[in-house]
Structure formats: C-alpha cells, structure tokens
Amino acid sequence: MSLPVTFHRAASTEFIEASAWYETKRVGLALEFIAEIDRCVSLASKHPLQFAIVREDVRRVVANRFPYSVYFREEKHRIVVLAVFHGSRDPAIWQARA
Image 1: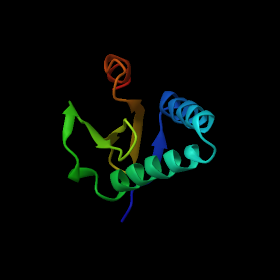
Image 2: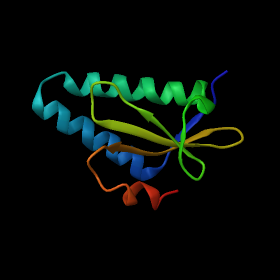
Image 3: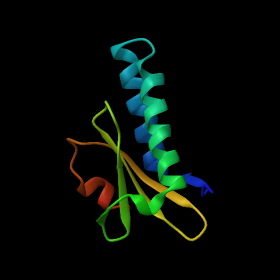
C-alpha cells in the first residue's frame, strides 16, 4: 500500500526548476528527469522504511542517472517530500526544512 505524498513548497519549486533546466540541455530530458524523480517518490511512498535515515527522521532516495536525491519524512498517514536536491548543493538548505 502506498502512502499519499505531499511536497514541501520549496521541494516542488526545486523539482520544477530542475526539470526546466534539463529541458534547456536537450529536448525531452526533462521528461526523463521527471520520470526518475517520480520513481524515487513512488519508492518512498511504497517502502519508506527501506531508505536510511540521513538526519533525525529524514530519509533519502538517490536518483539514478541524475545527481539528485529526494529527501522525505514519513508521517503517520503520508510522505512529505522536503527536497528534490542536487548533490553539490549545501545540505543546510534542505536541513532547515526538517
């Protein structure tokens, strides 16, 4: 059973901006990026405990092929995506949302 997923406003913005950036690099690349992040979010929703805790109660799914990770928190009845985050960015940015 999958838990419903909610995106933190900043995570949604990051996701949209990264998708737009990938589309500028190659037509259709944004769709591939979106599909990969959707896969990560789906895994988090279906199997949240499968992923290691990286800080307090925040877990991470590492994307394939793209240098991004999805940081999320499992709550009682939902998954909250805190960040769709590029690996070279300062983690203090997403940690402030936790």
